Every structure is written in C-alpha cells, then in structure tokens.
Image 1 (cartoon, rainbow, N blue to C red):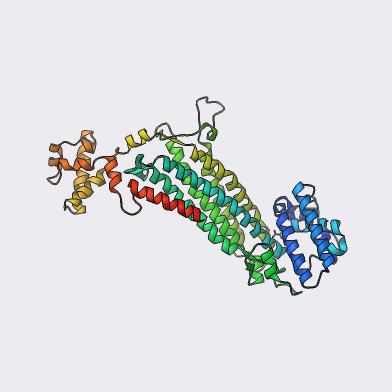
Image 2 (cartoon, rainbow, N blue to C red):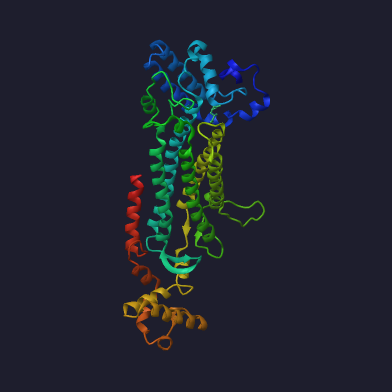
Length: 461
Ligand code: ARG
C-alpha cells in the first residue's frame, strides 16, 4: 500500500490528494517488465556480494518470474493505492515470496537509479521498432522510384516551377533525411546504452555491488560514471524525443507533397482506396487523411520534445520529482510513430502516379530557361550575360503567350545575336534532365547510382 515504501518516520499516511497527484502507474506500468529485469540483475549483484544466499537468490528469481508471467497475462496490475511501478512490483514480490525475502531486494538501489535505467531500456527497445518501420518507409520510396526510373516532373522551388527533375530524384530526396534519422537513432543508441543502476538515490551504493555486471545483464554497455549524473540527467531521453520529432518533421514534408499532388488541380497522384478516406456527407470525396495525420502528428512530436525540455530546464542536481514528467511525452512519441509509420509506408507503396500529366507540366512556367543560359555559356557567353539573354527570351515568349520551344528563328535573332536554332536542341525536358549529370544531379544515370547507394546505406543501418 501507499505508505509501504517509507512508513517509518511518518505519523500518518499520505492524503488522498497527494496520492492522486503522485500516482504514475497509469503510464509507468509500461516499464513493469523492465523493472523485473532490473530486479533479476540486482538480485544477482546482491547474491554475488554476499547479501543473498544461493537459496534466497533462487527463490527471488522464481518469484520475479512469477511476477513477469502475471504482468504478461494481465493478472497483475497496479492497485489504486500503488504510487508507481516500482512500489507496486515490490508489494507484489512480497506477496509472492514473503516479506522476509521480498524486503531484501531494495538494498543498494533506489527508485531514482531504477527509473533512470528503465526508461533507457524501454526507449532502446522501441528505437529498434521505429528503425524497422522507418526502413519500411524507405523501402516503399525506393520501390516507387524503381518503378518510375525515367519519369519527369516539374521540380519546384518556392513552390514555383524551377527546373524539370526525375520523379525518382524527388522521391529519393525524401528518403535521405530518413536515412539520417536512422543514423541518428544508431548514434543515440551508443549514448543511451549506459546504466544508471547502482547510482542509488544520488550518491552511489554501498555493499560492493558489481554495476558493470548489472549493466551487462540489462544489455547495456557500461554503468554511468557519475551517480548524480546518471540518476538525474535526461538528455538521452530528450535526444530521443528530438529524433522522433525530426522523423515527424521529415515525414510531414513528404506528406505535404502528397496532399498537394492529390489535389484536383495537380492530379499527379492517386491514393489507394485502402489508404484514403471518404466523407460522411460528400459521396465523391477521397481524402489523403494519412498524409494529413502525418502532418498533424509532427506537431505533437515537436510538442513532446519542447515540453520535455521545459521540464528539464534549470532543474537543480540531483533527482527531483519533476523528472517523473519525462516519460509520458516520449511514450507518446513512441506510440505515435509506431502507428504512423506503417500507415505512411502503406500509403507510399500504393501510390499511383500520373506520369503523363507530370511530364506534360514539366516544361511549363519556362522551366527550361536555365538550359538556355547554360547552352549560351557552352558557346562562350559569360553566365551573367547568358542569364540576361535567357530572361529576355522568357519575357518575349511570355508576351506572345508561347513557350520557349515555340520561339522561331526570327524571334531568337531579335532577342539576341547569340541565339539561333541550335538552342532548340536543349529545349526538351529529357535533354534538360539528362544534362544535369553533376554530383547528386537529376540525370537518370546519377539518380540510379544514388538509389543504389541509398539502398546500401539503409542496409548498413
Ligand atoms: N516515479 C518516479 C519517476 O518517474 C520515480 C520514483 C522516484 N521518487 C522519489 N520520490 N524519489 O521519476
């Protein structure tokens, strides 16, 4: 019951108001199995240091296994009176193995070093799920790029027609940030894989417990070097929240493209029925709700990060109860991404592109004007002048309501003595795209190479 962790120096139990405020079992119960894993490791350390006999250690492990089974089956849940997962599981252990043995496990550890360790274990496990889901989004992007290796579309800056690009180039541009997010998760893993266990409340434990063995037992690389830092810093949690927010922001950009491409005016893309929604009133509607939810949930992921940082700001060393507020934001980020990413991957995998429509609009908006300027440079005209000439040709064509490719020889000569019929050779979207064969460029040969290294990088991670 509520007072069981600290009855000794208290004359009365906690007020119901305190109990209601203090309770965290409704969210930290998600850590129950990690708590039990920590208890197994701690029992081994206590036994190795001579504080549990072999028989006691065996009964302790058996009791903890029974608790784990009961947690898994749902037979064991926190009681109303339990403050947090640690207290609830200690009470359950005492019921299981008796107060004599159950009461020994708390020696040399505190809920402060426990919770700091358990949240890392939880996030490390879920980072692997998120990484796997991210790889599936990347796979879906790569598969779409592979099925459209030469399709051309308008490339935009400022949302205005800029230069033609390959659809595959555009799609792959959305995959690279996700590759970097995978790298961020991997880099974070090294920092997260440190165990605060053994730090006690703040100052470290007596009893000669082997913190390295506990860390290894829990699958972590090593114990924290400073018990005050280990029990009270949450930068590792905040960094995880940042990476999840970044994933949300990266996904939201792709989502926005899909929302725009799916409009009647663009009609670049059609969504699969299984990955779009209808309207309760307008029978004709087919809405890109997955993309909109991706866009919306990125705000929530950012909120989780900023909320957590606000909690951490200017906290005095070492543990403060404020730190209990670290868990809900990142738990929410985890569950948000774990439902969002599979839906997003499915939507991408089933997109159908109208490549005829895309290529038809690619040269619109004088998007080949840079090609005219580049053609002039290749004939010895300084780029600054070439830019002027090409701009003048755009203006002349715009006044006549024609495209660059429609300018006849007279008009070309009228705009500049540097221009002649030869320029028409570069006034095709295929020619334009093929000519951009510099590093990272949109030429089909470069985009195919890029795709190969994208796939290789994703496999490495
Ligand atoms: N529930 C707390 C947390 O999530 C851990 C318990 C530490 N409580 C304490 N009074 N020191 O951070």
